[in-house]
Image (tube, rainbow, N blue to C red; front, top):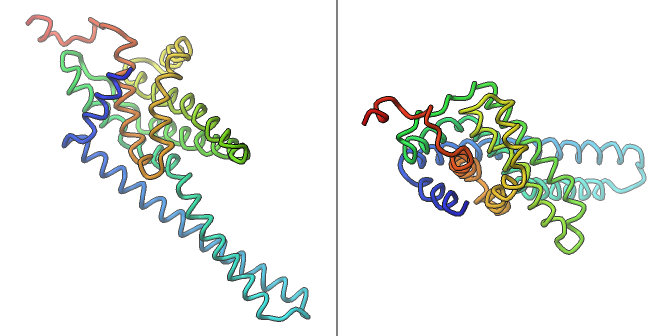
Length: 246
């Protein structure tokens, strides 16, 4: 498992994957900024509209008070969005990363497993659906763990363990489905759920670090390619004929 971690990290900054990393980070940042700007405008409008309505309902209250309240709410909303953007990063990067999962996997397979035929690229729709699933699960996990954050860090521990399970299983299935039908990939994951949960711990660690979480899809996919290969063992049927003859 540690060998797979080191291999994934070691390859991340080689020219082929570095290009994917820069594209993934760039698209993620653009999407996060667009979401943040959109939400800030929405909340600012709601604060201003609410203040105007309240002023009309309670006309005896000085106008300056309502303007000040609207301004405070707008600032609070902006600060909340900045904080929320940090929590949104894993979800956004998971979605953006779904565009590059096959490119990442092919690069890893070509570099580390040249004697084996590469896996089949996932259908585009399947990759996007899986990316959306990871993004939604990430948001749900954060929302569920948020109330527990108040209890001496228990929420962060719950969040960490949940991310290890959810992200580990999703990226494992993405790697496995390049070589297996979806049903078989899921059955393999269920049969080895304990090991895959442990394998998901390094991914949970990466996704827990603000800003560093931007590299999560690249690392997770490269890492799970190695995990799937080790779990599958030697697969003679995948050896290229030319290599077999040699």
